[in-house]
Picture (spheres, rainbow, N blue to C red):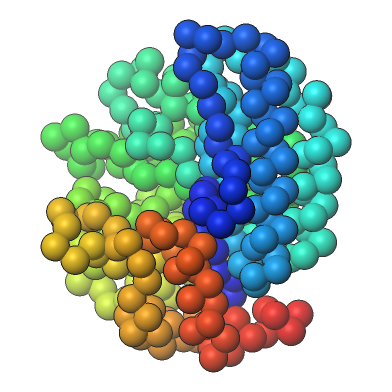
Length: 301
């Protein structure tokens, strides 16, 4: 079991997602920005290693406008050595990486233009993970998408569009249950049709389930991951007290997290904490997880 957090580290004094306005784009500015983003990513990964945080979600902004036609600068070639060195660091220390495009990536859309832009975004994410030379345990997670007034047809459209994706995307793509439209059970049906692994989001399951308990849900999601995919990835968070429905908590609820670990044992999984204070809560979670046999075995390894 590895524990991590997404995209931003508030302790290291830099950002791996620096960007700029599209109107001010130039190849030179892109190259300079990617250089600084990669330097910061290296800093974050070294912080994480020293803190036993071995799971990290890389920001989609690592290469600004990476999926946009304007971004013609050869960032993969320019930074081939830097990407390869980061990938070796990740592999050498048994770390795991994921990425998560934003909500505008919808491959089951009715509009072909939206699908086209979504596929371009997925290609960009796959290019980043390929540039790092990471194996297929490094994943790109997305939601099923919209319902468009006909959920069955929308699920069928997802399966159809999925089958047309590039192999570079297919080897990394996973789908997660969401908080209002598609339950874990819906995602499991899509898995049966496509073979796509299902990432389990615990908070979304709390808000939108088909009645399964957490232990059962985690076991079912874990069965969709083949050995080459690595173990189950799980997103964990709780609700913001007094916040709007679906808003993530500012900090970890230690008792709830300990109970989540207890409920899900012995299923092995890597846990991404989608909690707003990032590494602060992740460090607290590591302290709690040290008492869990799944985590200790990973550290001993």
